Length: 338
Image 1 (cartoon, rainbow, N blue to C red):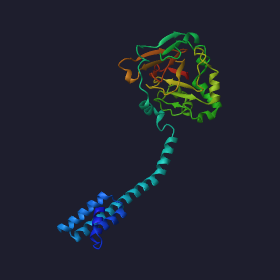
Image 2: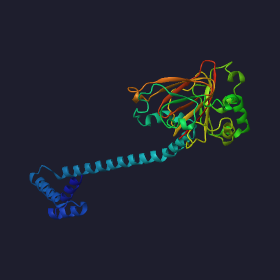
Image 3: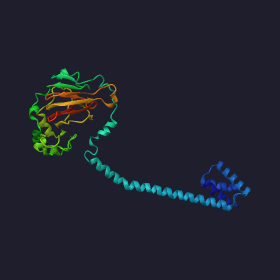
Image 4: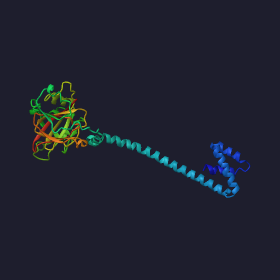
């Protein structure tokens, strides 16, 4: 378009020389000398050949101006549309995102996200492992060589002396939480697994017939006792595991798992520490599996625990699931250490 405008200026200034017109254009468009020389040649050639008339040049100039105007108009409306879109939708997007982030379990446990972003295993943790290391009840000094390893461990009769093995039950849990009703509103972690129970309130509101599996479907849940009062009362029933190293840092939150039959589905725990679990009531079968990238060098295996046994598993790297014998009630306490 600039070329057409420059040629038009040349044509309509017969009193000026081509050089003066070029200088005028240079001042207006800041063209370099090479471009001005080429424009002079184009102008002189058009005049000599007579193939370009004044009307042709005017028409070309007009069309080029119209094209530039339309292009600028389209660009202006396009820019305005984007700005309007951003201005109008940004508050809506912000409110929607805020709402979704505030919805509990919008992405339940984030397992899909965690699985997609977990680091790849080097398979050293599971190579040549075909079962847990089974030990008799032992002191922390005897367990020390294995305490921080990734090798799954079962310590037989390790917690059979705990008062919790005989005292802790669904009824006692309901009684303890009843003394701290605010604990039911704490934002503690609740796992319903495959059951239809969605909160601790649902668990405690079950009828005795449903709780004892006389009527209704099977149920199995897990929840953290993160309320200080509840935690203090529960730890009077079991205390610190004597087999853990003296320098082990314990979590300030424990988990209770209880219910029938179905147990926990296969999963990884996205936590920061190793795990210990005490089998207080009932029997439980465990199945451990390596991460998928280690299937070619490692194998899955299962084992069985009884009341009074303790299990130590690095559930961050071992896929694990549990099941309970049909019709049998199981209760466990679980926590972390490092």
